[in-house]
Length: 306
Ligand code: UTP
Image 1 (cartoon, rainbow, N blue to C red):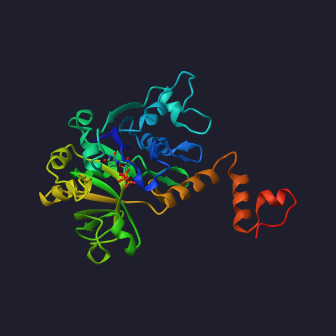
Image 2 (image 1 turned 135 degrees about the horizontal axis):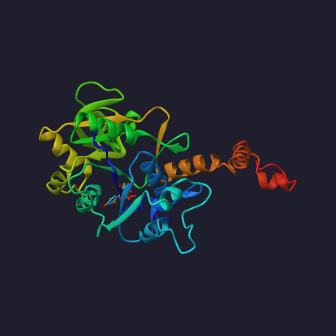
Image 3 (image 1 turned 135 degrees about the vertical axis):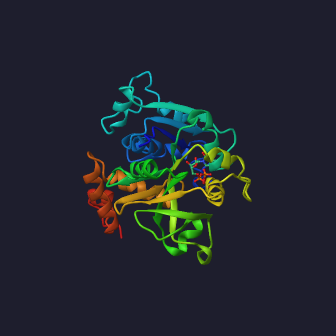
């Protein structure tokens, strides 16, 4: 079985949907509870056996590189609240950085990884998308790697079912022959209208590729906004007769897209409420707010909020 050790984390996008928060700071550094989102993504990769991490950065993204330094004080990203710096300080995880000089789309960002990847298969984990299972790193990348090793397709994508009226926000796959925990696909359509969607299984922020993907990215035309989309490159692969498989998120695995405010806020709340030290007190605080009592006023003996 092929052991995949390299993972690309693209983090060079502009994050315009979160303006003004992300005008001068990376969305990937937004906190989810006590950790920045990209640290949680890196932890998930490491938990799934990926220990060589290439982060694609760009303008206004320098904070990401600083974050993964050990730092002069010896503990920059190390706190009692994560396992990741322990692995880092053991020297078992290596970080590399490359810049995408202009954000020209996810396909273009992944193309920057060619010198790092060489002729090995590799994983891609979007830096603004967290997939957790009960607050722990999800195992979907491991399952994708196993499928890649067993079947040797050109690519494997993670997918999850989304409501029918939400398909136009995602890349959507066409199953070749039924669906299940893993299934082969015959097409991928970027942001289809619900009436034209081939299924409601949406591509979900995790991929495994054979190095063939680079030649397909190179020949993928830009879309209407001038970006090179990874799903379009995968579509060309399928049209050339390559095999691509989908692996569905397990029922407990939840993906949060930190790039839009609603999802970001949900992810922050979930992580903060799961905090081992402050989670219980915070849950109580949130309950009081939801029940219409303003905790600060109640503490001062003032009237209820409503
Ligand atoms: P998105 O499409 O969600 O990011 O990319 P965006 O372009 O920053 O979003 P908006 O529309 O402006 O709000 C998903 C992931 O791919 C990276 C992003 O940083 C994010 O982690 N990405 C996207 C790149 O690295 N380069 C790109 O050109 C585009």
